[in-house]
Image (tube, rainbow, N blue to C red):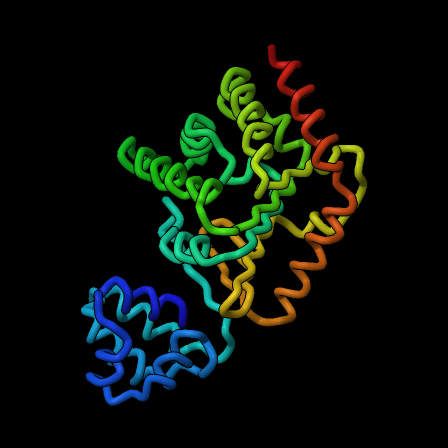
Length: 269
């Protein structure tokens, strides 16, 4: 929330000094609000959102979060068609490290466009072509973060079974597997596969995304059918970090993972 208030100010084009003067805030108060170093109060947030001319629907949503935030966690309930990506995109831009474990599918930031289309078409959501096109375009735009100028480190852990699922057919999956090895060749990207021979392990609790930040608390993203959860409580962050650490140790090395991916692709030819 604090980082979004800072982003909204920057989008408005208003310098911090002007905002503080207009609302009667000290510069230190505004700084603490934007850096997450103080609790957020509905009156302060409402004044900021009004000054930034935030649309009414988004303003009401943000104020609802502030008023009901007895803990720093929040949830987004989807409309059953497509997930809301605004918060995720904003967090991805600020993260210094992005760690993602997936059980059923190729991680979104590594998907080819045709793989994403096949996922949408097989989702059972009865999406229109326009909705599919927008979702694919948004996902491809997010992937530019892999080549960004900042120092974001990306770590991906994925189950072998997800790479063996023929999403879109053999041709689509062959090109997807080749894309995985291409993506993992980047210096800031690590990809490890958890082999199907593993027994029970911490990943059985489901997929998870852990985003680490320089200027505010780390964040855990959990996605379930129809609901997205953003968790900032220390206990959730610590648990996610420990699960990823254990999965990293159980997974094949990046080198062996690349060889396995190559062998899976070769079978499709």
